[in-house]
Length: 115
Length: 113
Image 1 (cartoon, rainbow over the protein chains, first blue to last red):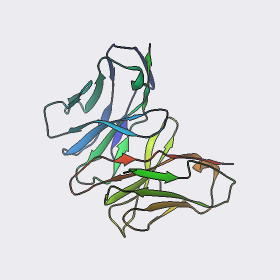
Image 2 (cartoon, helix red, strand yellow):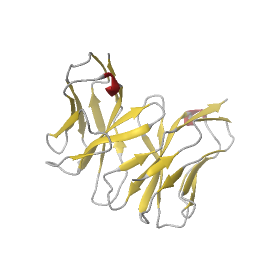
Image 3 (cartoon, chains in turn brown, green):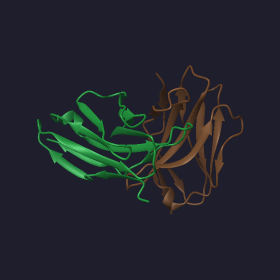
């Protein structure tokens, strides 16, 4: 079974600064997807960014980028120019390409952006 | 286009009572999912339905049943609620023509006394 670990239960960052959230995973598979989801106080899960394991280039979406280290099984999320609206829980998730009906989620990191 | 909707938003049950959580999506997705979210544990998959007419167990299926009523709707039933089922429940859907991302509903907060 796959496991996803987020070792930072809570983090804080000043508005306009950069913050990095960590995620590691354990799998014996070679083809998979990794995701970061954001869950604001409204509780709805919102996709932030997606990374295909076969791609060496790190994914970016505006202020959000990832550092994907396949050999180390590490998948960190960098948020640049942090905004108050970034305050939320962030979940790292893993999906096996051959069983893509099953997502595995980490326990989440609560990010507080301070003015 | 409402995306994924869930009803109810909140529910309080007594131990032993039954209830059904409803989920519907209007994105014409084939796959639908039910998760539970507990503090410090992230989301765990309860059941999923890869396509209309099929359902499969996830990580934590005990105490739950599901019905894929049609392509749009996927319900989760608690036959005899227990305090351990106090949680926030999320429904999600995705298109599986190619591996894709999941779209989540707003969640249902369930408390079992």
